[in-house]
Every structure is written in structure tokens, then in C-alpha cells.
Length: 144
Image 1 (cartoon, rainbow, N blue to C red):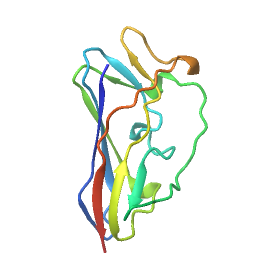
Image 2: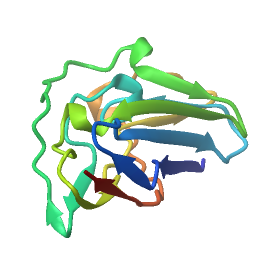
Image 3: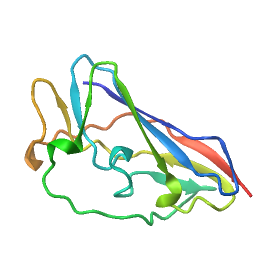
Image 4: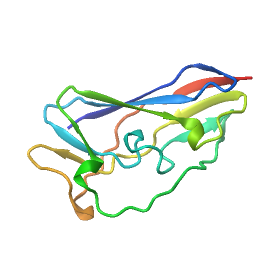
């Protein structure tokens, strides 16, 4: 199973323009997979899933931190072979990206569970199969 991750964002943001990040997951494998959406933009911002830096210094995460129970079926995203799905978030909802400067964003987090057919989700915590997708980093400049 091969899951690819891609980040994209506008290279130049002015004044109050939203810092909209596009997060894309692609199933580059040959099996249908189910991906647990925890700590991905597919569930919204619920934890510090990205590393954001301004002019080389890490920007503090100020968003929510959730405690979790067991995964539920609706916490999984299904990707058919070759399928791509995107989620968009505004980084300003959890990081201070309003100051002028040069920013970089990375997704250093692993996917908590990736299930390939014929197995099916959800699974218990001790059965979770963590996968770390290769994911590009992105950069943008905020100008005032």
C-alpha cells in the first residue's frame, strides 16, 4: 500500500488573505485503502499536525487538543486505487500566520491507521497500522 501526501498553498499572501493550505492524499497502490483521518485536515484542526515556521523560528500551535476514544467507522476516509482526495484548512485557525515573514509548513505526522482491503475499519488501538507518507513541505511569504 502506497499513500502519497501533497501540500500546497499560495506563495504570496497579502494582509488578511487566508493562509489556506490544501492537503491531498493519493492512493498510489493497487488496493482500496481506508485511512484514519486523525491528525489530518480531513477531520479539521484537532491537534498540532503541522510544523509551521516563520523566518526559521517555530510558530506555536494554539489550536484545540482532543482526547480520543476508539476509532469509529466514520473516522476513516476510503481511497480507491489512484484516487486523490483533498481537504482545505486555514492555518490561522491554529497558528499565528498573520505577521509578515517567510513561512514553511511541514506535515511530520504519521497516519494513525491505514487498512488495505479485504480488512476493514475500524480496528482497536493495538491493531492500528501507522504509515508515514512522504509529504512535501511548502513555503509562503506574508506581506503587509
